[in-house]
Amino acid sequence: MTGPHPLPSPIERVEVPAFFSPSRFGALGRCKLSVLGERSASMLLPPTVHALVGTIVHHVRRELSEGHWGAELNREGACAILLAEATQQAELQLSGTASTAALVPLREAMGSRNWELRELRLRRWVARLALQGKSKPARPLRDLLGVPTGQGPDSTRLETGDEAWLVAPSMRLRGKADRIEQTAPGTLDIVDFKSGRLHDEEGQLLPDATLQVRLYALAAEEAGSVSVRLFLEGDARYPVPWGDTEREETRALLKAISEDLPAGKALGAKSLAEPGPHCRGCRLRPSCGRYLQWGPTVWPHPQPTGQEPPLDVWGSLERVVPGSRGDTVELRNADGHLVIVDGVSPSRGLGGLAAGEPVYFFDLERTEDKRAHGRVVHPRNFHEHPPDGGKRLRRARSLQVFLG
Ligand code: SF4
Image 1 (cartoon, rainbow, N blue to C red):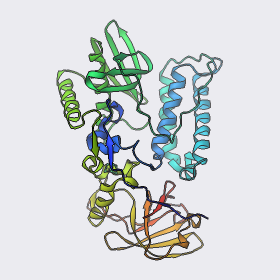
Image 2 (cartoon, rainbow, N blue to C red):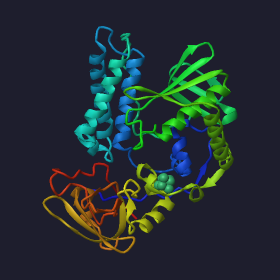
Image 3 (cartoon, protein in one colour):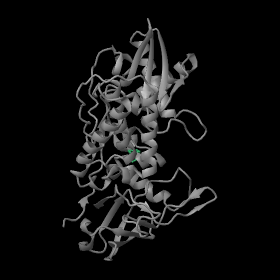
Image 4 (cartoon, rainbow, N blue to C red):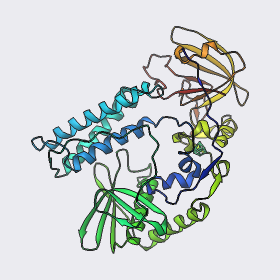
């Protein structure tokens, strides 16, 4: 049994890249470090299960669109086979790494209902299109745990087809659109696929996805396209407005970020980090000094639903009590309160630690659920394995533990 790894050293500086990726631009607007710091971190938290399943669905759509399936199959059958194969490949990758092994099987980690919803959306998409198998062999799923390289062509480029490059060096934009179709001479339809939901609670298209395709439009116009139409595609295709107002707004946003982030400049990580509820999806949390300072300042205050800080906690170890359902860990957290983390797998090696050791937990599940008047309290009772055996509470499958 080995004990937890030490907390990674904090990111100190990052170098600003020459290009921005439209697909990460929304996140860049909330916290610059979350995008620019990924390649500087010595360790990243695993991707969320929703992100992993999104990558699998994306892969299946690409294989179906490009005819990488047996021409003798019908498209529904091909979809089912490709999804099963991609899931198997994903689970093989995840089970080979200690930090992600508990995410297998993915269907359980995601929850059957959510999994079936993704499957249903994929099947609806398949049923709507005239897809053609070309008997080309299915390609392997990409590395799910690697850090995106941020590499690509440096000169102006405007491709059509699937996974089409759009590069506009004068605007510092470079990305791959899921699909670019030439609908008439000089007119392009730019389509981005989304495997999850496409609309927010108010029924509006998600702002990050909308901004992404608008940045593609700017790049396409800069690269020579006369006319552009934009779409987001889930189980149906939704047009994204693109006219003078949207163009001006998108240009202004891009200009502001470009001025803040000059290409090639080395900037201090602390000046780029902007902690907030968006830290929940960020893989840099253990290496982000600003987040580690910010967390304990917001834990004591009830937050609006959906705005809560991540389900992380850290502090000084008080004691570890072994039990039939795993270890119960008592911590004096960083804002001075006693916190219980229940059902911790003994294989994590916390039982051998001395009182007073600083211990960090990332991606726990809440055992208590305190909500009042639309606000949520950061819990003082967490778990890895649920005390109810999984009847109502979920296992913390992405949990990572470090020593300070
Ligand atoms: S943890 Fe939060 S503050 Fe730190 S890089 Fe991620 S999003 Fe930014």
